Image (cartoon, rainbow, N blue to C red; front, side):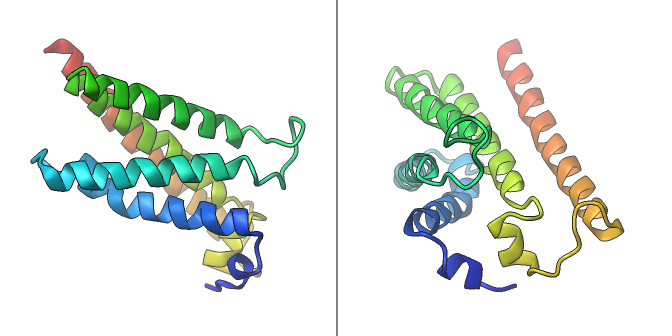
Length: 170
């Protein structure tokens, strides 16, 4: 592990990573905490602030240019921003079920899927965590790592889907 690729990255990348990591750390407190008290509210405001900063700053990161200056990953940023607006609107209307569902989906897509895509070999975060000489996605170890991450994401996605179905059945 080396922070060198991150320390030499443009400021937008550094801001993006810090905000995303802060949101990632706050996620269990905000989403899985049973009591919806002041701690939940404060952590929720911090989480939303960080996820919005991460999403907005992603538009300043244009290293992978597939659609003009953007990449398909930027669609996740748009989805995240839209979801935050919908979730805030839902909770202001006292629709707790919709708020919870939207926030869980936002965490899954905005942090889980986007975070996994940030770890693709050749990307900066892959180099930070695994070093420049890490096995690529097509080697045995790289393939095993990607299968494990895909299975973990599929499990979380399935649990979110199950949760949504159980909530809808009530």
